[in-house]
Length: 177
Image (cartoon, rainbow, N blue to C red; front, side, top):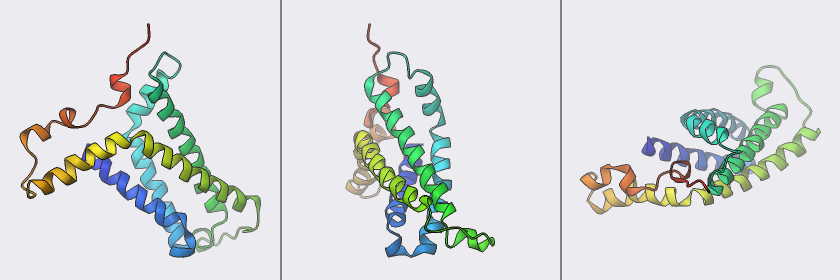
């Protein structure tokens, strides 16, 4: 599951970077890519649903601070991203007109779209920072180690994910007395 998560995360990150600047990609690509990004985010959330539920249930208990911080950052990121998606659809120039729906492009939705996009980028940066150890470890496991071994595959030691990458914080936290 780690490789699948990592590849999806890379795809999400690249798509966010492309979609974030519609002047470079053009409005139609910006809108359709953003819609695809929303669908991909749903897949990402479904893959991590157990973590969301487990941390959510234990949120008010004495849970290690990093899990709590990750949960809050991810929740704020989700809210900002959903706001970007909804406001983006409401000011759409490509997707909604395809269905004969016209919207007001000068409305408050444009301001909300811009603000929530900026907040989404901020929360994405924080999310990446909080998960940096996992990112580096996964890069080593799936990119650098196989390249160093001449793409001959992973060594037996590398096949055990627990030996290579740190376990998620929610599995290794220590409760305070």
